[in-house]
Image 1 (cartoon, rainbow over the protein chains, first blue to last red):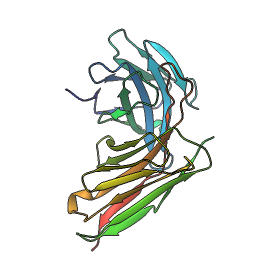
Image 2: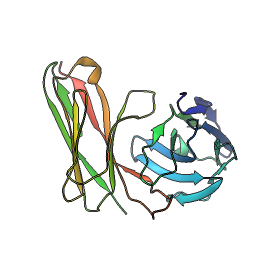
Image 3: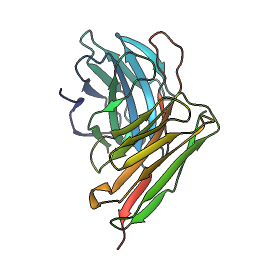
Length: 113
Length: 116
């Protein structure tokens, strides 16, 4: 079974621009979660999608948004980029059951200049 | 909000040594997960724990879900060079039953390096 895939792997953007990141979950997994990883704050939860609906959301500003498609693929968008948005963005997928194990993709390294 | 205290922050290992790390929280969790992350990669799931008191092994790795549900530890026996990396604990609380699941709360990580 193929693992979680994320595209692109690396991205460089300028302050004020917007960016869209993509995640394809493991086949059969219906839940997709997004996390931001920075050296200072560590791994922080952004949001979780299940059956095209946002089910849970972390403490991030409204500039961070996401969506999930009918095939469970997910995208996250960050608008009006700030320098502090530079981070590794990780996507994790899991089965729909409560407390399911989450499997991570390789991440997208976003650099904002 | 919920926080996890993971210790130690870093440690040096010599091949063959046993390694221990732990996570504690003021909150109760329903699930504890342990991950390893190598540079430039996403975290890889090592062990998942679902019941208080549960002791689970995966090769040379052993993890336990604390009785109080507020802590967990991970042991690595007879370490080898490829054990080097950053280990994260993560706790999860169910939002509600019937299909929903909570997000993961992560510790800050334990960085394993080789003794110079």
